[in-house]
Length: 326
Ligand SMILES: [Mn+2]
Image 1 (tube, rainbow, N blue to C red):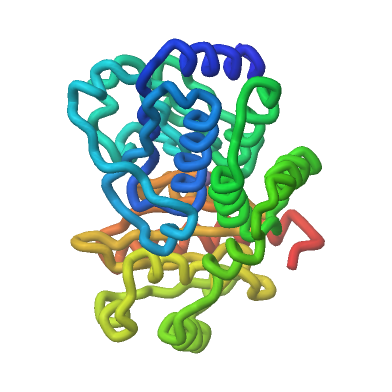
Image 2 (image 1 turned 45 degrees about the vertical axis):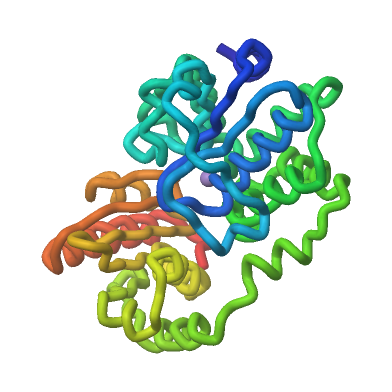
């Protein structure tokens, strides 16, 4: 089915239900909270007679500046509700197990559609953020939908975080126009950037440590292992530890960069790349995601080394067959 038909079906479903619950993935980021709260704002403002909730288990206090999700509701409410799940590629990652009892579900996502689910499955891997999908949905039906400045701020936040502050190639003319539409709501863009990127001095000191300690493979993979000891020393949350991956994103010649983070009994892996996709490496080690940004999980040093070897091979092959990379 084409995108416009899917959007029309989604709007028809929204109109059909008196109660709608929006869910998102676990260990939330700016895009999933932003798209959940942004969609909630659009639905509440456009359909004030309906009950609209954004509900998830894990919290991310650094995103409280764009608003808070709702408290859990009873199973009876779920049974009569439409559930819209945003930014979540696989059902396993939905941070709300009650999707199983919701009357109907809709998947709205921008990750590669490895696991279609929901009564309606609307996936746009041509857009760089779930927030961009919500913006486009709003734009398509702007003659009948409404949104406030708060909703636009939440959506803007997700656009900023999932595009690396508008730097990635996914920023097409169409996406810039969606961002422009949000700015037209009078949002304070500096407020969003400040809340997202002003850092505690402890985090900066940790970045200093990281830049002094990262390693490189022979063909150009930069990597860092953030152990339990380091997490304790710098008093990091898991989110802070994993966001450190971004500090390795501008090293000349290192086309893939990887952070290994101790997390409970496993080692979580975050992979990023430019020019060459890294997702095949993530998929080989219990993970996946986007072509140039994905995750994985490993369990010991041996697996770390095997993963690094695979990533190194990917870069080697790319460099041998391509020019113009930096
Ligand atoms: Mn996203």
